Image (cartoon, rainbow, N blue to C red; front, side, top):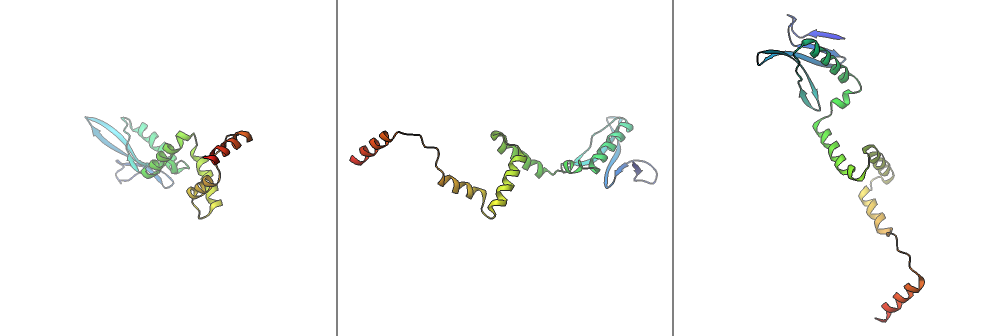
Length: 152
């Protein structure tokens, strides 16, 4: 654990570091009360939760620094565009009951097999050549339909 202050006099902000990840804790006064505010970035936005107790703020900052410095960092660093893309994907897939990982795996497999042909083109090609199921008819009814069409 690395706790250091960014000022030589030991005052705020206090910086909590884990590898290249860091969370700064600022001290501020709001409505006459002292607050301690860990500051970090998540989803491309600055986050600043506040605590009335420095120790609580420090524990939270250590947890955040650990997350930012670990495998979870990729999740915490998602941009607004990433979140929007995820939400749009869910809007398309949820009504179909298809999970994102299944859809992406199937798309990747189709893309590998199709090469430069778009998935849309492949589906259109398939749809034109594969008729929907034809209702079974007796030979007698087909002959009768043919004769009535031929006579008219």
